[in-house]
Length: 190
Image (tube, rainbow, N blue to C red):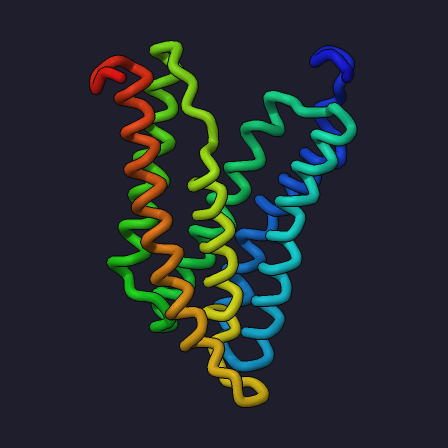
């Protein structure tokens, strides 16, 4: 394992995170033209770029090149890409605005909670539930971006069902982070 001073911050895992961040404005542009063809292109771009989330983590762990910059960029890239997709789907009528507002509020609240916890010396690590939430959001977004019926499959309907699962996991994992914080900080006891 390399020490932090031996690791280049411009490595492949961090570069993949930067690509994901740069894809957010591209996704905005693609979703401004919501026809059938552009929906397929948008869903493909979103799905492929989201797959790099797994790849950058795998490479960083395998090659021992986990950096503070990577720890910052990876969740930032996820949040930017996912919230961009959700926000762009609101005016297209593919997702309810109140669902997106609550999901984004959860992200902001957990990020703020982590900052407070860090200042208190309390570590709030990414939970399994939080990781499932991210996966559920990505999995529901792909069919919601596709939206149309292709080969007899109503992708909007499938995406809407998956959105319910993603919403429940989003709220549940957010509450879990707060309970974890209150336990670790001593506010709730053990």
